[in-house]
Image (cartoon, rainbow, N blue to C red; front, side):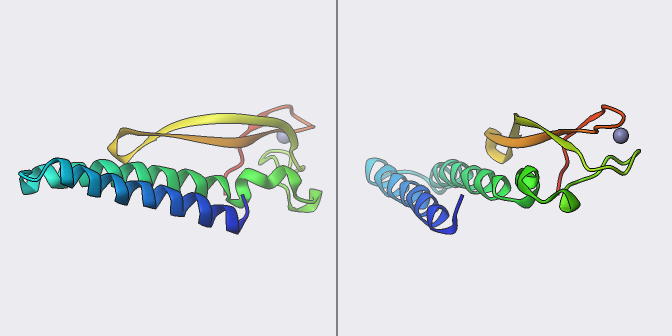
Length: 120
Ligand SMILES: [Zn+2]
């Protein structure tokens, strides 16, 4: 994702959290501090998960297949650059039980045939 796309996506996500919170407050004029806190946490954790996912996705590790051979991760056994085996979706759960989906490139060693998920 390019920087401008981040800006737009993140701005929209933040906007949604803020607008949602404002709306919730209007609908719950008698809410206690605890209830407000809970409503806020819910929205912030959703925003947090979105930002985390996008930021992680944009890392160099996710894009190593496009790197020149010399910069690719190597097999720890054979020390030869890995070959891309395409993308695999990794599903994780972050704070607030928010699901994260990270697409990561799987690599295979051309010598020993072992598969890896190089991480940055
Ligand atoms: Zn190997």
